[in-house]
Image (tube, rainbow, N blue to C red; front, side):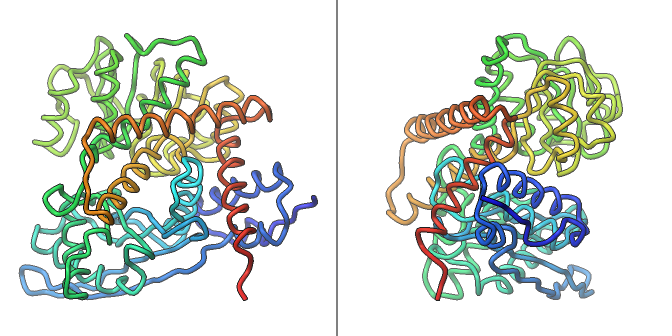
Length: 425
Protein backbone atom coordinates (compact mmCIF):
# COMPACT_ATOMS: atom_id res chain seq x y z
CA UNK A 1 0.00 0.00 0.00
CA UNK A 2 1.24 3.50 -0.75
CA UNK A 3 2.68 5.31 2.22
CA UNK A 4 2.95 9.04 2.86
CA UNK A 5 4.58 10.67 5.87
CA UNK A 6 2.29 12.78 8.03
CA UNK A 7 4.83 15.63 8.06
CA UNK A 8 8.28 16.24 6.53
CA UNK A 9 11.46 15.85 8.53
CA UNK A 10 12.20 19.53 8.11
CA UNK A 11 9.56 20.44 10.69
CA UNK A 12 11.69 18.94 13.48
CA UNK A 13 14.66 20.78 14.91
CA UNK A 14 16.25 18.21 17.22
CA UNK A 15 18.46 15.53 15.69
CA UNK A 16 17.35 12.63 17.89
CA UNK A 17 13.65 13.32 17.25
CA UNK A 18 14.13 13.63 13.49
CA UNK A 19 16.20 10.45 13.67
CA UNK A 20 13.44 8.58 15.55
CA UNK A 21 10.76 9.73 13.13
CA UNK A 22 12.97 8.82 10.20
CA UNK A 23 13.40 5.27 11.51
CA UNK A 24 9.61 4.98 11.78
CA UNK A 25 9.22 6.34 8.24
CA UNK A 26 11.64 3.73 6.91
CA UNK A 27 9.82 0.92 8.73
CA UNK A 28 6.44 2.18 7.52
CA UNK A 29 7.70 2.22 3.94
CA UNK A 30 9.06 -1.33 4.17
CA UNK A 31 5.86 -2.59 5.80
CA UNK A 32 3.54 -0.76 3.41
CA UNK A 33 1.86 0.74 6.48
CA UNK A 34 -1.50 2.43 6.03
CA UNK A 35 -0.94 6.23 5.75
CA UNK A 36 -3.46 6.95 8.50
CA UNK A 37 -1.76 4.53 10.88
CA UNK A 38 1.59 6.09 10.01
CA UNK A 39 0.25 9.50 11.04
CA UNK A 40 -0.98 8.12 14.37
CA UNK A 41 2.35 6.48 15.21
CA UNK A 42 4.48 9.43 14.11
CA UNK A 43 3.45 11.78 16.91
CA UNK A 44 3.10 11.42 20.71
CA UNK A 45 -0.31 10.84 22.27
CA UNK A 46 0.23 13.50 24.96
CA UNK A 47 2.94 15.85 26.19
CA UNK A 48 3.34 17.70 29.48
CA UNK A 49 5.89 20.48 30.13
CA UNK A 50 6.16 21.87 33.66
CA UNK A 51 8.07 24.68 35.36
CA UNK A 52 8.49 24.49 39.11
CA UNK A 53 10.46 26.18 41.91
CA UNK A 54 12.93 24.47 44.21
CA UNK A 55 14.34 26.04 47.37
CA UNK A 56 18.08 25.38 47.66
CA UNK A 57 20.03 24.81 50.85
CA UNK A 58 21.26 28.41 50.90
CA UNK A 59 17.70 29.77 50.66
CA UNK A 60 17.71 30.82 47.01
CA UNK A 61 14.91 29.68 44.73
CA UNK A 62 15.52 28.30 41.24
CA UNK A 63 12.89 27.42 38.65
CA UNK A 64 13.41 24.18 36.70
CA UNK A 65 11.77 22.79 33.57
CA UNK A 66 10.60 19.19 33.32
CA UNK A 67 8.71 17.01 30.86
CA UNK A 68 6.67 13.83 30.60
CA UNK A 69 5.58 12.44 27.23
CA UNK A 70 3.41 9.45 26.30
CA UNK A 71 4.00 8.23 22.77
CA UNK A 72 1.60 5.28 22.44
CA UNK A 73 -0.35 3.31 25.05
CA UNK A 74 -2.34 0.89 22.91
CA UNK A 75 -0.40 -2.15 24.15
CA UNK A 76 -0.55 -1.25 27.85
CA UNK A 77 0.30 1.47 30.38
CA UNK A 78 3.12 3.85 29.52
CA UNK A 79 6.62 3.16 30.80
CA UNK A 80 9.87 5.02 30.40
CA UNK A 81 12.78 6.62 32.19
CA UNK A 82 13.25 9.84 34.11
CA UNK A 83 16.56 11.60 33.43
CA UNK A 84 18.27 14.58 35.07
CA UNK A 85 20.59 16.22 32.53
CA UNK A 86 21.75 19.80 31.86
CA UNK A 87 20.60 19.73 28.23
CA UNK A 88 17.07 18.41 27.76
CA UNK A 89 14.25 19.60 25.56
CA UNK A 90 10.87 18.33 24.45
CA UNK A 91 12.21 16.74 21.27
CA UNK A 92 14.66 14.65 23.31
CA UNK A 93 11.80 13.35 25.42
CA UNK A 94 9.53 12.74 22.42
CA UNK A 95 12.21 10.60 20.79
CA UNK A 96 12.89 8.61 23.95
CA UNK A 97 9.17 7.98 24.45
CA UNK A 98 8.85 6.69 20.88
CA UNK A 99 11.88 4.44 21.32
CA UNK A 100 10.33 3.00 24.48
CA UNK A 101 7.16 2.13 22.55
CA UNK A 102 9.17 0.10 20.05
CA UNK A 103 11.33 -1.43 22.77
CA UNK A 104 8.39 -2.85 24.71
CA UNK A 105 6.75 -4.16 21.55
CA UNK A 106 9.95 -5.81 20.35
CA UNK A 107 10.29 -7.90 23.52
CA UNK A 108 6.51 -8.44 23.74
CA UNK A 109 6.10 -6.60 27.06
CA UNK A 110 2.57 -5.10 27.44
CA UNK A 111 3.73 -1.51 27.96
CA UNK A 112 3.45 1.63 25.88
CA UNK A 113 6.24 4.17 25.54
CA UNK A 114 6.86 7.19 27.76
CA UNK A 115 9.82 9.33 28.81
CA UNK A 116 10.52 12.31 31.01
CA UNK A 117 13.08 14.31 32.88
CA UNK A 118 14.27 17.61 34.26
CA UNK A 119 16.74 20.04 32.74
CA UNK A 120 19.28 20.23 35.57
CA UNK A 121 22.90 19.49 36.35
CA UNK A 122 22.51 17.01 39.23
CA UNK A 123 26.18 17.36 40.18
CA UNK A 124 25.34 20.86 41.45
CA UNK A 125 22.61 19.60 43.79
CA UNK A 126 22.98 18.38 47.35
CA UNK A 127 21.08 15.26 48.38
CA UNK A 128 18.46 17.43 50.05
CA UNK A 129 18.09 19.61 46.93
CA UNK A 130 17.82 16.56 44.70
CA UNK A 131 15.07 15.17 46.90
CA UNK A 132 13.19 18.46 46.82
CA UNK A 133 13.46 18.67 43.04
CA UNK A 134 12.33 15.06 42.63
CA UNK A 135 9.30 15.45 44.89
CA UNK A 136 8.17 18.68 43.25
CA UNK A 137 8.66 17.32 39.73
CA UNK A 138 6.73 14.18 40.69
CA UNK A 139 3.90 16.34 42.01
CA UNK A 140 3.77 18.34 38.78
CA UNK A 141 3.57 15.28 36.51
CA UNK A 142 1.49 13.26 38.98
CA UNK A 143 -1.66 13.82 36.93
CA UNK A 144 -0.24 11.33 34.40
CA UNK A 145 1.29 8.71 36.71
CA UNK A 146 -0.20 5.56 38.21
CA UNK A 147 0.11 1.75 38.08
CA UNK A 148 -2.51 1.48 35.34
CA UNK A 149 -1.50 4.65 33.46
CA UNK A 150 2.22 5.46 33.49
CA UNK A 151 5.01 3.76 35.45
CA UNK A 152 8.25 5.81 35.45
CA UNK A 153 11.67 4.16 35.78
CA UNK A 154 15.28 5.34 36.30
CA UNK A 155 17.40 6.71 33.48
CA UNK A 156 20.44 8.99 33.21
CA UNK A 157 21.48 10.44 36.60
CA UNK A 158 18.54 8.89 38.42
CA UNK A 159 18.42 5.62 40.34
CA UNK A 160 16.68 3.64 43.03
CA UNK A 161 16.69 6.49 45.57
CA UNK A 162 15.05 8.81 43.04
CA UNK A 163 12.38 6.19 42.41
CA UNK A 164 11.81 5.74 46.15
CA UNK A 165 11.22 9.49 46.54
CA UNK A 166 8.83 9.45 43.57
CA UNK A 167 6.90 6.48 44.93
CA UNK A 168 6.64 8.05 48.39
CA UNK A 169 5.43 11.36 46.95
CA UNK A 170 2.70 9.65 44.93
CA UNK A 171 1.77 7.51 47.94
CA UNK A 172 1.45 10.57 50.19
CA UNK A 173 -0.90 12.18 47.68
CA UNK A 174 -3.15 9.10 47.70
CA UNK A 175 -2.93 8.33 51.41
CA UNK A 176 -1.63 4.78 50.96
CA UNK A 177 1.43 3.04 49.54
CA UNK A 178 1.40 2.68 45.77
CA UNK A 179 4.51 0.53 45.18
CA UNK A 180 3.55 -0.27 41.57
CA UNK A 181 3.42 3.41 40.59
CA UNK A 182 7.14 3.46 39.71
CA UNK A 183 9.80 0.83 39.00
CA UNK A 184 13.50 0.66 39.74
CA UNK A 185 12.95 1.06 43.48
CA UNK A 186 15.12 -0.34 46.31
CA UNK A 187 14.08 -3.84 47.33
CA UNK A 188 13.05 -2.61 50.78
CA UNK A 189 10.15 -0.66 49.24
CA UNK A 190 8.98 -3.02 46.49
CA UNK A 191 11.93 -3.29 44.12
CA UNK A 192 12.93 -6.50 42.40
CA UNK A 193 16.00 -8.67 42.36
CA UNK A 194 18.18 -8.34 39.26
CA UNK A 195 17.61 -4.62 38.70
CA UNK A 196 21.24 -3.51 38.75
CA UNK A 197 22.35 -5.82 35.95
CA UNK A 198 19.16 -5.95 33.84
CA UNK A 199 20.22 -3.65 30.99
CA UNK A 200 23.70 -5.16 30.91
CA UNK A 201 22.35 -8.70 31.00
CA UNK A 202 20.07 -7.98 28.06
CA UNK A 203 22.92 -6.37 26.15
CA UNK A 204 25.14 -9.37 26.86
CA UNK A 205 22.57 -11.80 25.41
CA UNK A 206 22.43 -9.71 22.24
CA UNK A 207 26.23 -9.45 21.99
CA UNK A 208 26.61 -13.23 22.45
CA UNK A 209 24.14 -13.87 19.60
CA UNK A 210 25.71 -11.25 17.33
CA UNK A 211 29.19 -12.62 18.03
CA UNK A 212 28.05 -16.17 17.25
CA UNK A 213 26.64 -15.01 13.90
CA UNK A 214 30.10 -13.62 13.08
CA UNK A 215 31.91 -16.75 14.29
CA UNK A 216 33.38 -14.84 17.23
CA UNK A 217 33.85 -16.10 20.79
CA UNK A 218 33.60 -13.58 23.61
CA UNK A 219 36.38 -15.38 25.46
CA UNK A 220 39.32 -13.04 24.90
CA UNK A 221 37.32 -10.60 22.74
CA UNK A 222 38.52 -6.98 22.93
CA UNK A 223 35.91 -4.50 24.15
CA UNK A 224 35.78 -0.69 24.33
CA UNK A 225 33.05 0.98 26.41
CA UNK A 226 32.04 4.62 25.98
CA UNK A 227 30.00 5.79 28.97
CA UNK A 228 30.97 4.40 32.36
CA UNK A 229 27.92 5.09 34.48
CA UNK A 230 25.53 2.52 35.90
CA UNK A 231 24.95 0.78 32.56
CA UNK A 232 28.52 0.97 31.31
CA UNK A 233 29.87 -0.46 34.57
CA UNK A 234 27.50 -3.42 34.60
CA UNK A 235 28.07 -4.13 30.90
CA UNK A 236 31.80 -4.22 31.67
CA UNK A 237 31.16 -6.66 34.53
CA UNK A 238 28.98 -8.96 32.39
CA UNK A 239 31.48 -9.00 29.52
CA UNK A 240 34.37 -9.55 31.93
CA UNK A 241 32.59 -12.57 33.39
CA UNK A 242 32.05 -13.87 29.85
CA UNK A 243 35.83 -13.78 29.32
CA UNK A 244 36.07 -10.60 27.25
CA UNK A 245 38.95 -8.15 27.73
CA UNK A 246 37.97 -4.50 28.30
CA UNK A 247 40.75 -2.45 26.67
CA UNK A 248 39.28 1.07 26.93
CA UNK A 249 36.61 2.98 28.80
CA UNK A 250 35.37 6.57 28.67
CA UNK A 251 33.13 8.80 30.75
CA UNK A 252 31.54 12.04 29.52
CA UNK A 253 34.86 13.93 29.79
CA UNK A 254 37.82 11.63 29.17
CA UNK A 255 38.91 8.15 28.13
CA UNK A 256 41.60 5.70 29.22
CA UNK A 257 42.94 2.48 27.79
CA UNK A 258 45.17 -0.51 28.33
CA UNK A 259 45.68 -2.92 25.40
CA UNK A 260 46.46 -5.71 27.87
CA UNK A 261 43.12 -5.27 29.58
CA UNK A 262 41.67 -3.04 32.30
CA UNK A 263 40.83 -4.64 35.64
CA UNK A 264 37.06 -4.03 35.66
CA UNK A 265 36.55 -4.26 39.42
CA UNK A 266 39.29 -1.74 40.15
CA UNK A 267 38.01 0.55 37.38
CA UNK A 268 34.54 0.58 38.93
CA UNK A 269 35.96 1.33 42.37
CA UNK A 270 37.99 4.21 40.90
CA UNK A 271 34.95 5.64 39.09
CA UNK A 272 32.80 5.50 42.19
CA UNK A 273 35.49 7.21 44.25
CA UNK A 274 36.51 9.89 41.74
CA UNK A 275 33.41 10.21 39.48
CA UNK A 276 35.81 10.21 36.52
CA UNK A 277 37.99 7.73 34.63
CA UNK A 278 40.85 10.22 34.25
CA UNK A 279 44.00 9.26 36.14
CA UNK A 280 42.95 5.65 36.59
CA UNK A 281 45.98 3.52 37.56
CA UNK A 282 47.42 1.09 35.02
CA UNK A 283 45.85 2.96 32.09
CA UNK A 284 46.95 5.54 29.56
CA UNK A 285 44.87 8.62 28.74
CA UNK A 286 43.20 8.95 25.36
CA UNK A 287 40.45 11.04 23.81
CA UNK A 288 36.94 9.78 23.25
CA UNK A 289 37.58 10.03 19.50
CA UNK A 290 40.57 7.74 19.88
CA UNK A 291 38.45 5.22 21.79
CA UNK A 292 36.01 5.00 18.87
CA UNK A 293 38.95 4.44 16.52
CA UNK A 294 40.38 1.48 18.47
CA UNK A 295 40.62 -1.83 16.67
CA UNK A 296 38.41 -4.09 18.79
CA UNK A 297 35.77 -6.79 18.55
CA UNK A 298 32.96 -5.00 20.40
CA UNK A 299 32.30 -1.29 20.90
CA UNK A 300 29.62 -0.43 23.48
CA UNK A 301 28.30 3.16 23.43
CA UNK A 302 26.64 3.37 26.86
CA UNK A 303 26.51 7.15 27.38
CA UNK A 304 24.12 9.68 25.87
CA UNK A 305 22.57 9.97 22.41
CA UNK A 306 24.29 10.89 19.12
CA UNK A 307 27.74 9.60 20.06
CA UNK A 308 28.33 7.87 16.71
CA UNK A 309 27.43 10.15 13.82
CA UNK A 310 28.23 10.54 10.15
CA UNK A 311 31.31 12.51 11.23
CA UNK A 312 33.00 9.69 13.16
CA UNK A 313 31.29 6.46 12.02
CA UNK A 314 33.91 5.85 9.34
CA UNK A 315 36.61 5.72 12.04
CA UNK A 316 34.93 2.89 13.96
CA UNK A 317 36.98 -0.31 13.69
CA UNK A 318 34.89 -2.67 15.83
CA UNK A 319 33.20 -5.75 14.43
CA UNK A 320 30.11 -5.25 16.61
CA UNK A 321 28.59 -2.03 17.94
CA UNK A 322 26.16 -2.68 20.80
CA UNK A 323 23.96 0.36 21.49
CA UNK A 324 23.61 0.21 25.27
CA UNK A 325 22.41 3.83 25.28
CA UNK A 326 19.25 5.15 23.68
CA UNK A 327 19.90 6.92 20.38
CA UNK A 328 23.66 6.46 20.53
CA UNK A 329 23.98 6.11 16.75
CA UNK A 330 22.37 8.33 14.11
CA UNK A 331 20.69 7.00 10.98
CA UNK A 332 23.46 8.41 8.81
CA UNK A 333 26.03 6.59 10.96
CA UNK A 334 24.01 3.38 10.67
CA UNK A 335 24.49 3.40 6.92
CA UNK A 336 28.24 3.96 7.25
CA UNK A 337 28.60 1.11 9.74
CA UNK A 338 26.48 -1.23 7.62
CA UNK A 339 28.53 -0.47 4.49
CA UNK A 340 31.67 -1.28 6.50
CA UNK A 341 30.29 -4.70 7.45
CA UNK A 342 29.90 -3.78 11.12
CA UNK A 343 27.03 -5.43 13.02
CA UNK A 344 24.98 -2.81 14.90
CA UNK A 345 22.73 -4.07 17.71
CA UNK A 346 20.08 -1.33 17.95
CA UNK A 347 19.07 0.38 21.17
CA UNK A 348 15.46 -0.81 21.01
CA UNK A 349 16.78 -4.34 21.45
CA UNK A 350 20.13 -3.93 23.19
CA UNK A 351 18.71 -1.90 26.11
CA UNK A 352 15.45 -3.83 26.48
CA UNK A 353 16.64 -5.78 29.53
CA UNK A 354 15.64 -2.84 31.74
CA UNK A 355 12.15 -2.78 30.20
CA UNK A 356 11.74 -6.49 30.88
CA UNK A 357 12.95 -6.15 34.48
CA UNK A 358 10.67 -3.16 34.98
CA UNK A 359 7.73 -5.24 33.83
CA UNK A 360 8.74 -8.00 36.26
CA UNK A 361 8.88 -5.47 39.13
CA UNK A 362 5.49 -4.01 38.20
CA UNK A 363 3.88 -7.46 38.07
CA UNK A 364 5.40 -8.44 41.42
CA UNK A 365 4.22 -5.21 43.07
CA UNK A 366 0.71 -5.63 41.67
CA UNK A 367 0.57 -9.19 43.04
CA UNK A 368 2.58 -8.48 46.24
CA UNK A 369 4.48 -11.68 45.43
CA UNK A 370 8.21 -11.67 44.67
CA UNK A 371 10.31 -14.06 42.61
CA UNK A 372 13.71 -15.65 43.15
CA UNK A 373 16.63 -14.13 41.26
CA UNK A 374 17.24 -17.36 39.34
CA UNK A 375 13.68 -17.17 37.97
CA UNK A 376 14.16 -13.55 36.96
CA UNK A 377 17.47 -14.18 35.20
CA UNK A 378 16.14 -17.22 33.35
CA UNK A 379 13.04 -15.37 32.15
CA UNK A 380 15.01 -12.29 31.10
CA UNK A 381 17.47 -14.45 29.14
CA UNK A 382 14.62 -16.33 27.47
CA UNK A 383 12.80 -13.17 26.39
CA UNK A 384 15.98 -11.48 25.14
CA UNK A 385 17.12 -14.58 23.24
CA UNK A 386 13.73 -14.94 21.56
CA UNK A 387 13.65 -11.26 20.61
CA UNK A 388 17.18 -11.32 19.20
CA UNK A 389 16.45 -14.48 17.21
CA UNK A 390 13.28 -12.91 15.78
CA UNK A 391 15.16 -9.76 14.75
CA UNK A 392 17.99 -11.76 13.16
CA UNK A 393 15.44 -13.86 11.24
CA UNK A 394 13.64 -10.74 10.01
CA UNK A 395 16.93 -9.17 8.97
CA UNK A 396 17.87 -12.22 6.95
CA UNK A 397 14.43 -12.60 5.37
CA UNK A 398 14.13 -8.93 4.39
CA UNK A 399 17.85 -8.38 3.69
CA UNK A 400 18.05 -5.42 6.05
CA UNK A 401 20.21 -4.56 9.05
CA UNK A 402 19.20 -5.37 12.64
CA UNK A 403 17.78 -1.91 13.36
CA UNK A 404 15.51 -1.96 10.33
CA UNK A 405 14.42 -5.51 11.20
CA UNK A 406 13.72 -4.59 14.82
CA UNK A 407 11.75 -1.52 13.80
CA UNK A 408 9.67 -3.53 11.34
CA UNK A 409 8.74 -6.06 14.02
CA UNK A 410 8.01 -3.43 16.67
CA UNK A 411 6.01 -1.08 14.44
CA UNK A 412 3.93 -3.93 13.04
CA UNK A 413 3.02 -5.07 16.57
CA UNK A 414 2.02 -1.59 17.73
CA UNK A 415 0.09 -0.99 14.51
CA UNK A 416 -1.75 -4.30 14.97
CA UNK A 417 -2.78 -3.39 18.52
CA UNK A 418 -3.91 0.06 17.40
CA UNK A 419 -5.91 -1.39 14.52
CA UNK A 420 -7.60 -4.01 16.71
CA UNK A 421 -8.61 -1.41 19.29
CA UNK A 422 -9.85 0.99 16.63
CA UNK A 423 -9.93 4.78 16.68
CA UNK A 424 -12.08 6.45 19.34
CA UNK A 425 -14.84 7.59 18.93
